[in-house]
Amino acid sequence: MSGGLLVAGTTSDAGKSVLTAGICRWLHRQGVKVAPFKAQNMSNNSAVVVGADGRGGEIGRAQAMQAAACGLPPDLRFNPVLLKPGSDHASQVVLLGEAVDTVTAGNYRELRPRLAGTAFAALAELREAYDVVICEGAGSPAEINLRAGDYVNMGLARHAGLPAIVVGDIDRGGVFASMFGTVALLDPADQALIAGFVINKFRGDLGLLQPGLDMLTRATGRPTYGVLPWELDLWLDAEDSLAYGRVLGRPGAPHGTDWLDVAVVRLPRISNATDVEALATEPGVRVRLTVEPAELAAADLVVLPGSKSTVADLAWLRETGLADAVLTHTAAGKPLLGICGGFQMLAQAIHDPVESRRGSVPGLGLLPIEITFDPRKTVRQSTGTVGDVPVRGYEIHHGYVSAADPALPPLLRHTDGSAEGALLGAVHGTHWHGAFESDGFRRRFLTEVARLAGRTGFRVAPDTAFAAARERTLDLLGDLVEEHLDTAALWRLIESGPPASLPFIPPGAPPA
Image (cartoon, one colour):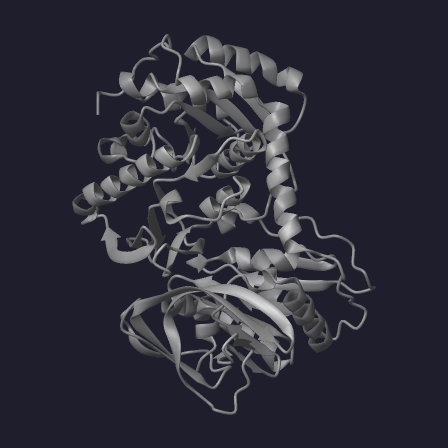
């Protein structure tokens, strides 16, 4: 068979990514050869995939998570177009894993045919190779100002003949109006592919919700395939850092007598914020995202995460007073961690003719290094050690260490023995993402952080396994789909497409 389904949403962050992953895990459990797909993702949270030619490439992190739900290694075809915003007006275009251009409102129309063609070809290949492909839309299919060139939502569904379901976040309110309006704003051919709805993040009495579901069915002629409950344990691999709120996850009680408090600066162009999720899986470790200087003062560890716009975000740090708070924190001997762009901010100087094109600017001056940006982008998976502790990670950056004090110790070493990152007193820096998913390295790092912060009662848990935590999340998604959705009806959609008798809901849009 060559079945498929499009998971669309009423809004961004409605639950498309997690529902797609849950359906993938449910099908994988049934022995179905299933793969995920998102034609175009706009996100600075990416994962590194090693292509058939041995080179590293990028896809959206959500698609890497969905691949794991399918029991598959990530594939560049799972997210053929990735747009990485560097400002409010421009995004880097990553096509089948490789950065190829910069897109703006002015040139997007010129690039779009190439992007759409690549996406359609990738989906066709996947449908040849897999029994089922579960596709995730982007934003909302009712963004009617963008419909003419759409190849991610109903444009993809029309091209590939995919049935679609629409998921809405009831926790935000207005879910019935959003679902009805999504259908009613589509043209007749698009409406004919919208088969029904899924409610996400419901908490309360389902009996009180049921009359609304019945009315929605009468108003649209389409069923609701199920209601997914609010689930606090679904926080790993969030597509957007804003989805985290303030505290990540539900930190378990400490093994010792002390907690560790970790403050992560939520940069405007934060990238791969998922790096700190592994820290948040540890008992006794509270991890929160913040833009408040006062919260840095109270933290044991401050983290400057990755950034798609290192120089611009560094300027923002200074404008907001956060840079002063970071310097005060380190002056007190308390630990600081910079990851990728955050590491680059710690330098004496940053020379950037590529990303910001601002030339040379002063860094925070916390490490005796200089950073230079190169047009060639480093995208690779990496392995190394800290002492005898193995570490795995991945790199995605234009900037590199172009000058350093030869006496500066590295944070870790690549497998070939070359230095990576820097360690100077309580200041830690690395270009590696994902390093804290290595359990031994994470425990060693947190133990050192506790020592530097004076948290003598903190004890790292001996048995926390990040990979197992991620698998539990994927299994939970599969459980939610099996328990709360009409999986028999979903299977009919995947196998046979949308029902032929779906009614048109006026007013509709003019045909695209």
